[in-house]
Length: 230
Image 1 (cartoon, rainbow, N blue to C red):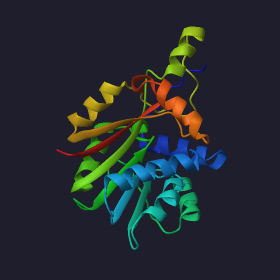
Image 2: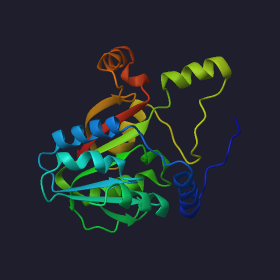
Image 3: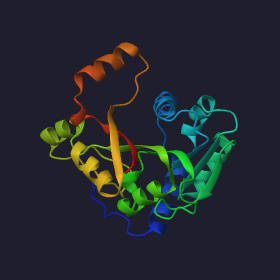
Image 4: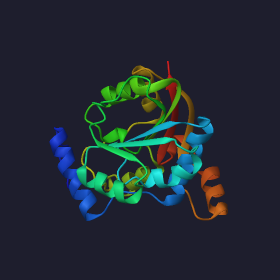
């Protein structure tokens, strides 16, 4: 596996994600986005304004829209113009802006809910991005953050067998443990109210039941943190 140095500027990262979205758009399964949408709409009753940080192709918004009350606003921001082109095609009901997560040009207390699905780990300044999320969140709002585990059981097996972790396709990426991510979010002003393990959403309910039963949270692929302002 070739080790690459992480990009050091927002321009570097923008170019990388433009390339990725032109070659093969980054996305999860629709059923996974539907699961995230159900979590956030159960945590916040009748949200009127939702922002997705690093929205990519707006696949999440396509699953979220049917669960929102009529007239609710969906706002997506992303650093990649190519991602936003795709977002406007996939879910034209959303409003989309080219923006870094560390510099959100929105007023304080603007949103009932924020989501950041598998993106926080790629930001140049994670702490500043978290503080910006906190700033634009309403006092009773909720943030859903999905981040990767440095102790994912498949990575541990790969290291045991080969001495290396599984190959990723994104160079700017951080991995932390369950407790380290929680500590980081709390350090920058969020209170973690719930942690949910995420190992993908299986098509089969039985397979999903076994995954949930057999994979401990601390060794799961990703963690979902539900957070509030403190």
